[in-house]
Length: 157
Image 1 (cartoon, rainbow, N blue to C red):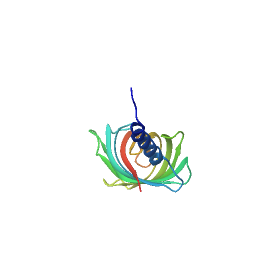
Image 2 (spheres, rainbow, N blue to C red):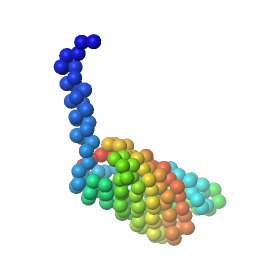
Image 3 (cartoon, rainbow, N blue to C red):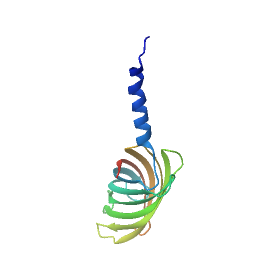
Image 4 (cartoon, rainbow, N blue to C red):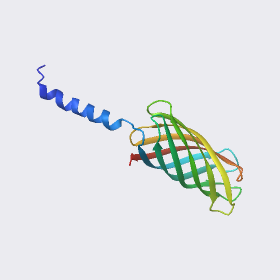
């Protein structure tokens, strides 16, 4: 096959563009919007939620995160539980795309149960735009525990 120099230029340019645009820097900020679904380990049979998450990279491996949203837990035997969590935490990248996180904060019930302490550990995989994670969310006062899968779209600010 006969290749000219111009045939190499386009793949080289695309490779460089993708590599440079994927690099992470200290001080980067991201915003993500997600949807989650899960199962309850207590009296509720399922949960659905939406959230927004802000991320500030204070090092190449660690970031501060702040998350809020809305979650609804469904039950056939008792009243449903719905709440708006407000959490802050740390995200630690084990590899370029794999991370673990921990968050804690307050969950404000929209169904009359008051306010509960909420915390969750999680693990996930994030690319440039897509974030998939699994978390175990525990709400102490509501006596509720949820395992949820989150799918999110995120972008650099």
